[in-house]
Image 1 (spheres, rainbow, N blue to C red):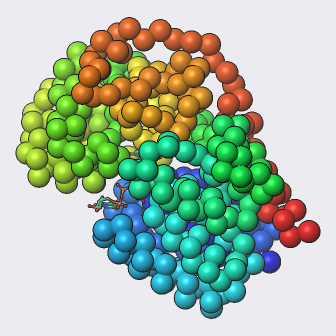
Image 2 (cartoon, rainbow, N blue to C red):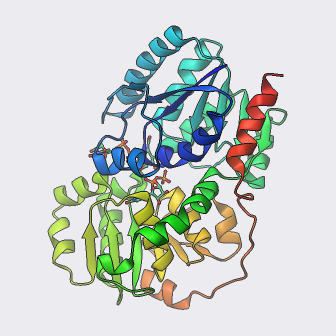
Length: 356
Ligand code: UD1
Ligand code: UDP
């Protein structure tokens, strides 16, 4: 049988790596890269480092407004589906590439397998929330990373098609963390274990409100601690436009760097004193690395990290980041919140049983 996988953004390259490795033992996989992310350090570096097979199709869609970006992908993916006639389409997560893949397949009555299904922030201002809801409701099989995701789907009357697989990002961490340890040392960044906080910012709700982004930058600058900031190109552009970039570069304690590779990122996470982020994936990786996380959002889809006390939501307008970090008390660690590291195998097994 032939399966088409659609990816296009940084976190999807990381998620596809462990699944593809197992999927290809049984199925012919055709990999479609929409090109939603295209800079080498947002895309190519992951293919090289994680040995992801070369895409069969590179759509090179690039950056546009939501409707235009999704629309261009939709048309191009449809052409591929008509030509290749696959038995199923796998989509990952909640980006515009996810939605375009799911929409194109649904109109052609091709079964859709959604990896990382059932996450909800219950905030429809987030583009990701719309992408997830739509994709979940179009999917034939939904692979939920957590019990909570299964529950969220049940609330929307999606039950029989749901499989609790665990999280493929945990698979990726388990596979790669020793490799990361062996390959990179924190001295590369002029730091030592526990001497810095690691920060990432890219979510629209933070970058697209200048007052909010400024509040975040101010709170990072007020920390009495080194901060390593691998900056997403979206945030880089906006900070430049707001004339905040130079201010950050001049600040002695903030180390502004280009986005790093996955293995470097794992190493930076493991060696950090704590992580400040608005990324979905990085919140979980903080948990896997057993370092405290401070999430610059009002809500999170990864509620388990908050409920266990390892993650704290921080509203940059009315919470002082420095005080929040100082007051943080560590909690007991629960091991299997995100599965047992075999989510990818469970997903491939789920797909196999779909065809029986
Ligand atoms: C997208 C996803 C988001 C995910 C994130 C992961 C959607 C709606 N959003 O957000 O869910 O968390 O990816 O990183 O799908 N840019 C570059 N070079 C690149 C890629 C982007 O310069 O290689 C810049 C462009 O100015 C672009 C902007 O970043 O307009 C935003 O890129 P886009 O893919 O639209 O959204 P992300 O913010 O990356
Ligand atoms: N990541 C990376 N380099 C970076 C920043 C993040 O490799 O400079 C990885 C990170 O380890 C995680 C994934 O990218 O595995 C998260 O992607 P991102 O934050 O872009 O998106 P989200 O998870 O919020 O959708």
